[in-house]
Length: 208
Image 1: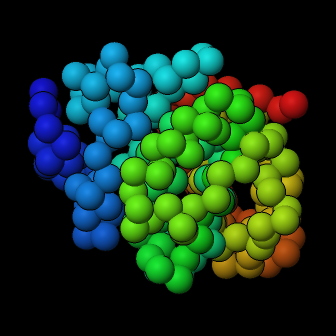
Image 2 (image 1 turned 180 degrees about the vertical axis):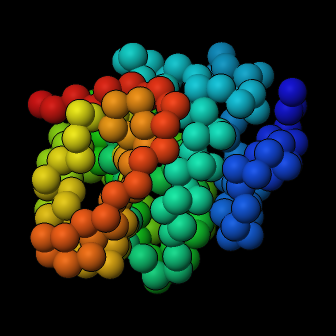
């Protein structure tokens, strides 16, 4: 069992979940322990989801790595992070989109939005690339659209239509649907290609 952030990254890399050099670098530079509650710091490098309060979790590292490898964030991209929670994934994304990119996170629980803001503030070189919005993630965030990519950390019965509308042509959505992870590639304004990866578990996406 990993006891440091580097050991966790090594575990994910050896397991084949982390493959892309820029993502491996982001996982090394963004310490998961900075995003878990104080009482759970000792468990931060376990490959399991951990509670962050309000019936929400910080996702299992394996799952985050798997989804980000599907998303493949690139420098300069504008990405919507739905269900920001404690902020870990938003900072990982900010690391990969670089100085010319932007990450907009949306979180519906005020206390978790405040938590994410505090955690993100620790990363002074990245915090200006991230904006966290308090709102209903199922509606996306039209004011920040269009997005190159959209990723979600909570499961729905289907991909919300707002996300499809707010995604650029050529963009991709990576999100849980039921017990699967789906990728939705936008070919044209009304044409999408989907792929499904089975066997995952997430907290539900709740609409206001």
